[in-house]
Amino acid sequence: MTTQVRTCPKCAQLMWLKEDQYEQLDEETIRGKCPQCGSTVRFTLVSQGDNAAGPKMGH
Ligand SMILES: [Zn+2]
Image 1 (cartoon, rainbow, N blue to C red):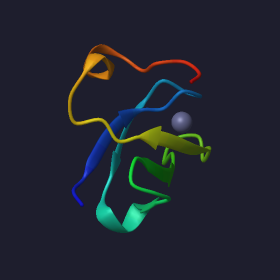
Image 2: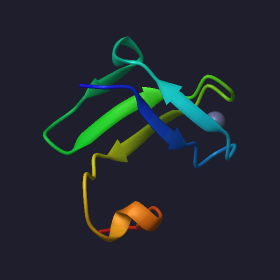
Image 3: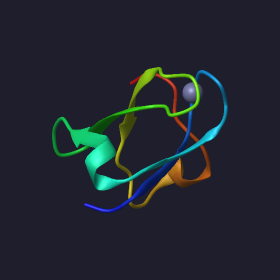
Image 4: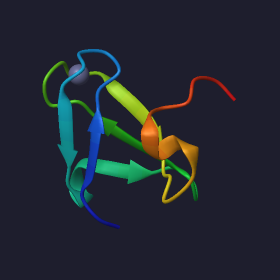
């Protein structure tokens, strides 16, 4: 796993999550805590595809 850089959906700040700052829930999902607002947020790991342009809402 590598450092994840994501935008927090709560406070819109960029989060840099190092390996020890997030956990992987399953193959595609990680969970981390925003350093700015303290929210626990989940992200889908996407290495390619249309999510590269922005987060997809819902399923
Ligand atoms: Zn936040």
